[in-house]
Length: 131
Image (cartoon, rainbow, N blue to C red):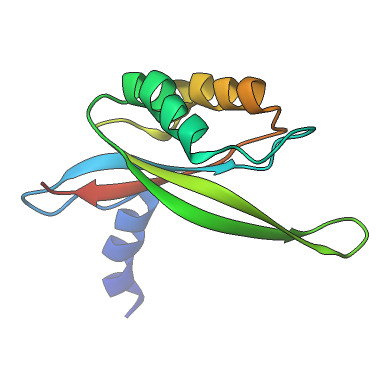
């Protein structure tokens, strides 16, 4: 029995299995842009469209998906806080997480500067994608 498991353990140690035929390895970046802006009204739809047009689209001209979101978290005092957000999903075929992060950082920094945000949450995950 133990001898039968050795090939399987070796495969696990080598990292993620290869993608199935007809797909390619990619990194998926999911970025969460909070719309609450310090000292001013919430980021409007028109401001979002401008940011999408002048910052996100030039950074990722091959495409992206933008969704409406509602985030929530517990603050230090135990209160539940909620904030409208925009969730952007970007599929980057052939890119690893460090390369995806390098492309996302200028976009995150632009959002933080423009709308006085503390952060942008971005999640990076490996995937196999097919078109």
